[in-house]
Image 1: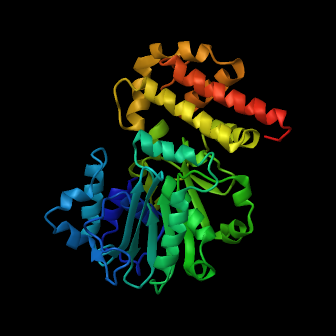
Image 2: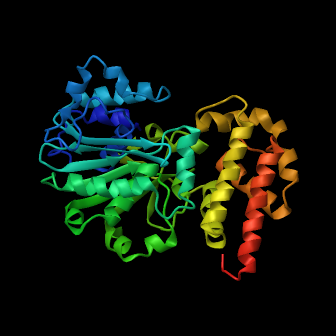
Image 3: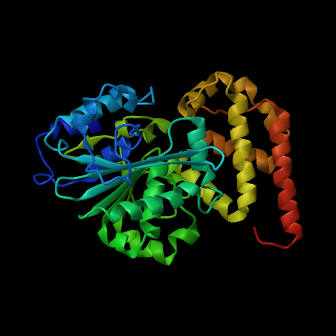
Length: 391
């Protein structure tokens, strides 16, 4: 058994004619979208041929390609394995785009990998491991369309005009959501070039979206992969057509592509989605159906207020924060006990099941933040009920 780094080394001598592009290649290119190609890859507006992996390795500022310290070593090993292989050596990296605007709340990036035969893999970047990045995933629970999705459609249409072969669209985490959204909402000419859409542990969509004509027409091309302990991939998951894969990680760590297990050039199939992940899917689906988008936004605000309030170690990574919670259980019960029973029960269930380190005693500090936010939720709900609107 192996991971994506070992897979790339083992299959180094096999070009895409000998072993066609597959799902593991898709996950690799989805992971590469997290790299900082800004100063290495020509902008998509330029009529350039792109750049190879080996050419990037030769540049003096090569280390700037790996911005996230936590995954820098793994990404370096993966990139080097690809740079000097027969399989990936002639792949050209092109049409990189990166947009970040905190005021507009948009974090978007995409990169295209062009094979020697003219086929292409369009890869959308997901959120990073920061608390801010994970917040962006949860924002999809109350926004029908986020700015990054609009940018993804525009990017895919623009790149498709320049690709002469077939296109595979991929993405991990939020990137998989963007891959599906862009493929569903792009132009008919672009759709004709798309042969497959590969989504790796990505949040889903509302029932209205997956029941739309555009989605149903594209559905046969969509492949969704989730690990057994999937949390993000089960958010708003309104489709039964996903494949479960095994991971060397536990809990939230299964979201990491480097830990997915590969055997015989394919993912090892998992047995079932674990109970906690099933809870995430069923709970949030019910929640979406019973609360307005405005109320969902207030709930997400409240939950991340709790994250900030309990982040005494000032962790930037969501994973680090959840691991530190075990030592912070004394910071919990005071805030929760002042909430109404229904709200308190729902909040505890969500936190316990999404963050494994949260135990029966969870949350404290500062009371006023959570109580005030939940006061707004209850007030909004009362106002809506009074107006005889269905929520």
